Length: 240
Image (cartoon, rainbow, N blue to C red; front, top):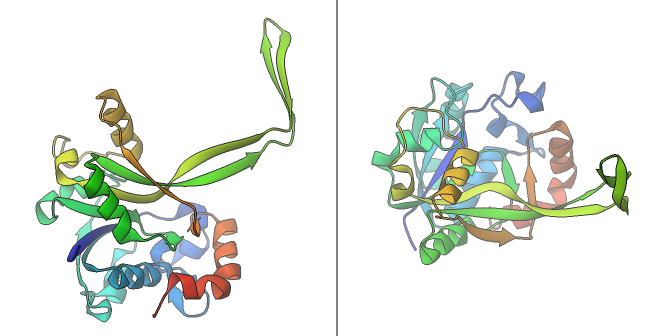
C-alpha cells in the first residue's frame, strides 16, 4: 500500500490537561525535551508510508498551522479543515469526505503509541468492515468487596475483583461509504457511529494491539509519557 492518507483530529480544547493547554493546543504539548505529540505522530505516519494528512483543527489551530505548515518537513502533503463549532469525533470527518480516498486512517491528535498505523488501514481494507477500531486491554482493580443484592439480600459477593476490558485507542480505519449517509455539519461522535452500526447489524471490526499506548488526555498520563519517553523514544521514532 502506498499513498496512504490519515485524518488527525486536533481541534479539542484539552480541558482535562490544563494548565498545559492554556496556551498550547494539546497536540503541540511537548513530550520529552525535543518533540511535541503531533511531531511524533507525523514522523511515524511518514515512516509508515502515509503521503498525505488532513488536520482537523479548532482551538488554537493557527499554532498548529504555523508548526506543521504544508507538511514538507515530513515529506508529506498536509491540508486543514477548521471546526467553527465542536462536531465530535466523526462530525469533522464527514465534512471533508470529498477530499478523502475511499479508505483512510482517523486518529486522535493526542495518542502516543508504537502501533503500525499502515497495518491498521491494511487490516481495515482486508476485512471490508464499515469501521475498524484499534483496541487495547485495560485492567481495573476494585479496592472493595463488590456485592450484588436483590430485595435487600446479598445474592453474590466478590472480594476486590479485577475487571478486564478492551478500550478504543483513538485510532480507526474508516471508509467513505460508511459516513456518507450521515447529515453534514451535525455533531457526530465515535459513540454515535458505533451504536448506529450495531443497531443496523453492521458491526465494526477490531484491530487488537498490545504494544505501547498512552492517551495523553490527563495530567497523570502526560507525566507518565514524559517519564517514560527516553526509554521508548527509539521504539516510537524508528530512524527519526
